[in-house]
Length: 148
Image (cartoon, rainbow, N blue to C red):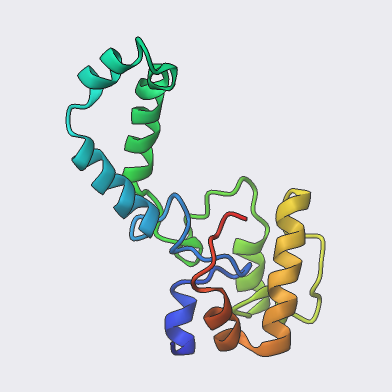
């Protein structure tokens, strides 16, 4: 994949926007919409099944979450709609004039505002991009789940 196309998929932090639960063009939104469609009016059946299969008692909140996931309400971090609370990367990368954090002469820094788990992933992703290049990193990670 060409570098410019990769910018449409990978956020400045290195995460795949396409794989994000909120991405309007992503797999999760598409698959959630398909599942909603295939389930149809399963509510009646779920209520009946709940009498002998306890997991189906949770169908109403599952259906609500599935509807939320099917909406897809984000166009990607580069589009200015990052959903991570107080993400420091979305503004910083533009101020620094870089496409990814590893390209900044101050990487790693403490401006991400990420929780410890995400900060560790951010550092690992950017270090890897710095080692092998953006295109090779994308090829390595394109089939991996975003949430790991």
